[in-house]
Length: 138
Image (cartoon, one colour):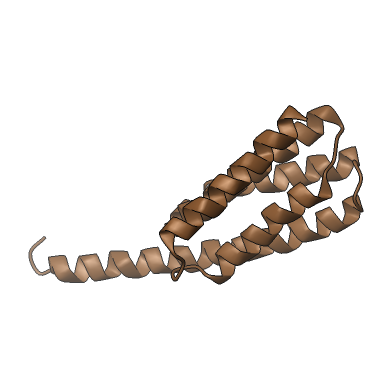
C-alpha cells in the first residue's frame, strides 16, 4: 500500500511478533514443566489413575506449543512422554524412572534452548523414544 510500511519494516515487525510468541510459549512450557513435576511427585512412584490422567492431559495439551517457538526438540520430547503416559493410563503400570528421564530432558531442553548441539539433541530424543517403546513392550 502506498505510504505504508516498507517490506523491511514488515519483516522486522513479523520477526518481533514471532519473538514475542516464542517468549510466551517458553513461559508456558516452564509452567507445564513445573506442573508435570508436581504431578510426578503426587504419583509417589506408583500408579494413580487420577494423577496419570491429569499428567497425560497436561502433556498432551502442550504438544504443538513448542513449534510456535521453533523448538521441535521439546515437541518431540512431549510426544514421547505423552506416549509413555498413555501406555501407563491403559496398562495401569508405572515406572518412575522412565517418567523422570523425560522430565529431566524437558528441563534440559528448556534451559539450553538456542545453544544445543543438534546431533546431541537427536541422540537424546532417540533415547527417549526407546524408553517409551521399551515401557510399552513391558
